[in-house]
Each structure stands twice: as structure tokens, then as C-alpha cells.
Image 1 (cartoon, helix red, strand yellow):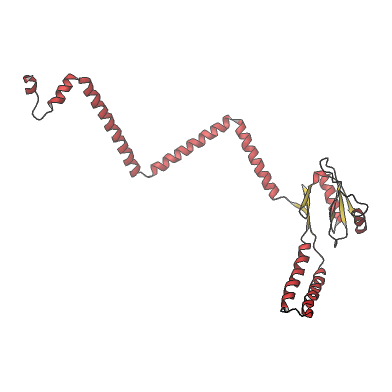
Image 2 (image 1 turned 120 degrees about the horizontal axis):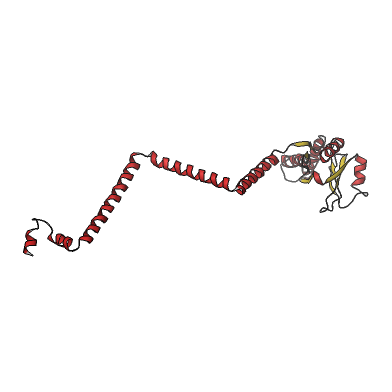
Length: 251
């Protein structure tokens, strides 16, 4: 024991040397673990320093990952034909929505009220406003005129807001619409015939959309098993043009 202590250099840890001689395997394993820890710390430090010195490296890594994801998605779509069909169907639906949004109108007619209705409406409103002055009500004279005359103009304008529009797919009039594939025929009606069709000679289940200030119209016969409506009757100032266009589209 004395010889062993004399062999230890001054300032050295004789316990560590004694343990090394007694347990050589544990000391070597401890040293290898410390070396691995130092190497891992050195790698983390070098990576951190590299990222700080080169800020574009993270962007390059993100670009590489995005490119890898794109490549994998392309490979998956090529290996899976059903995904291509789904994508193609989505594109077709989107194109269909665009086509419907830019649908071409083949015929458009505003069902405006006659211009001479405005003078009549203004005259009637003025007479009613004058009645307030004659009655002796404690009202300022301009209030009845300022309310009734604009109201009459607005009512006449609102009555003429209806529109008849025909596209390649459907017919629309005043908010109602019907697909052309359900129309089996069209007949032009003059003013007298139209009054008879919508009167005693008409079918109560028919759809009627007429304007009293427009005399002629068209009768549209329907062929739809799910709809009990036998025909439509709509007003138009140009029944011959409307009938000709509808026959052309349903032919």
C-alpha cells in the first residue's frame, strides 16, 4: 500500500487512480460518455453558429422541404389515378360555375311602364296634396306635395322593374325561371287572345305573369311530369321574336 501511494504523483487524485485500477471498465465507459456528450455539444454549437452566420440556410431548408413535398404529392397523384379524376372533376365544376356566371343572354326586355303614366301619377298626387290645403289642416303646404309626388313616381317606377330574359338554358321573368328543356312549344298571343287565355278559357293551374300596360304575350307549353303546371303565359311587346327564339333553342 505504501509503494502504491508513493507511485502517485504529487497533486493527483489517488482515489481516482485506485478506482481505475480496481474498476477499469467503469472509468472507460464514463470517459466515453463524456466524450459523446462533448461531441454532441460541439455539434449543436457548430449548427447554431452556422445558422447565425448564414441566415439563408433556414430558408434553403424550407425550400428543400417544400420541393420534397411537391415531388411526393406529384408521385402520389401519378400512382393514384382516382386523385387525378377528383381534381379534374373539381376543375370542371369550377369552370361550370364560371360559365353560369358569364351566361349569355339571348333576349332581354324590360317591362317598363309607359312614359305617360308618370304625368298622370304626378297629377293625381298633386290633387291629393291639394286636398290637405283645402281641408284646412295645420300642415305646411310643401309637406303633402313633397311626400305624395315622389311616392307616386317611385310606385310607377317600381311597377316597371320587371324583366323578361332568355338565355341558352332558361327563361326568367320577374324572379320566376324555368329551364328550356321543360318547354315543349310556344305560341304568340295578341292582346285579345291573351285576355281570353288568362280569363274564362284559361287553366287555373297555369302560371301567369302579365303586365296590364303590355297587350300581347306568349304561351309556353310545358312537358314536366313532376310539375302540374300546364303552361306559362308571359307578357312581351315582341311575341314573334320570343317565340322564334324559344323554338330555335328547344329544337
